[in-house]
Image (cartoon, rainbow, N blue to C red; front, side):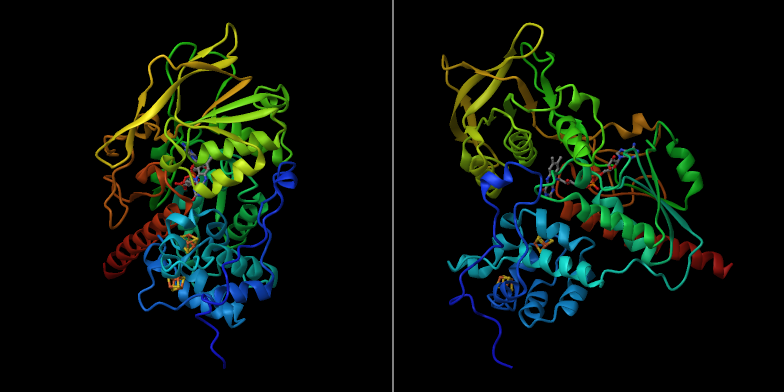
Length: 478
Ligand code: FAD
Ligand code: SF4
Ligand code: SF4
């Protein structure tokens, strides 16, 4: 067979076609089209098959990237899918929404040599989307049914990854979530233009088809006591994410018209499903025809500005206190937002809000970047006398999230938390201070990424299985 790989010198990097910004502004569909088969093969063939693949090292799941690129380049897609799904529960989701520039692709050696990274994420998405089309993605079919049951609190990527792994081993798995749909932030946080909802819903159905039970609309600590779950199940996994929005003070901070990012995004995602959301209908959580100001520079802020564009806002501005080079959000998302018509107002920090019975503007302090702090990032300093008012009909706060106080909310003693309020676990086993209670995802790490939640969920599932196996062998020996 002729050499298929190492084509990066002759073949330029090519992402799947991106829809024109004008068309994107009008809907919530994903912005990238799928690769055609020939294009996926061509792009995979650019990989130099490194002996020490830094792409793999920097993928939180340590995906076997060089192998599935080679198999794709050779047109052996079913095998590529088998390799890809062996380490990743949701490859087509990671392919869509991982910040690849900071993870696998950002560490690809041909990028370092100036040839443009292999488009790893786009190929990963292509492989598994094809697997779905071809019917290669199968529900769990455990060889033996185990009597032990595991209760998982939280149907985000962490909880679902664990549910999948445990069910495939034959355990009885029930996933509880306070929302009416499973998927966590993949359903109600991340907008459809990054991750179309049917991609997540088909995964939920696959889990159900494999025998995972979902108890949706059940808020643990309110509808069901945590202690009741502990008595019902042989092990518990807490995968509840982080949902306490960081807030802003200052004059006018409590005025109507100042929204929390997640309330705004959840309402938008629910209406995308055809649900009626009263606060969207009333205009409270709808940017249509309005001047929108979003405060923050992370990925949540990027999702808010781009959602507002799609809802038909008359203008959308993003205020961030540092400059473009120092913002935490992905540069790719900033570029997408700019193309779609978002204006970034760099070096601008909110000092308060103006308005009588409703906020109609943000009082903005202009900043300059001072000396670097301990992390090396330059600290923003206020420029005296340069304040101004930015007019707005809707102001969205997108400043990040902290964990809720679970021990208090759930009235549970002995569930240790860190000084940031995240749950303390043994880093190897993910077990908490309570015997048989494990935790994974954002509730342990703080606000993070889907791919890290998947990794934690998979590792926690291994540890839960090991614990239940050990208990079973003790019982068998007695
Ligand atoms: P979650 O996804 O938050 O799921 C937790 C689940 O637990 C939820 O369904 C919640 O309803 C449920 N729950 C909580 N408390 C209870 C309770 N008491 N009883 C019952 N159920 C409960 N990451 C990326 O990798 N790429 C991105 O592009 C990206 N974009 C993002 C955009 C936004 C707007 C946000 C907010 C986050 C984004 N993230 C992104 C981060 C990513 O979504 C999270 O890191 C990931 O979803 C965490 O997974 P998890 O399973 O820990 O928690
Ligand atoms: Fe890259 Fe994310 Fe896929 Fe890993 S899971 S290979 S980091 S896109
Ligand atoms: Fe291929 Fe890049 Fe990974 Fe090397 S680092 S194996 S070139 S994808």
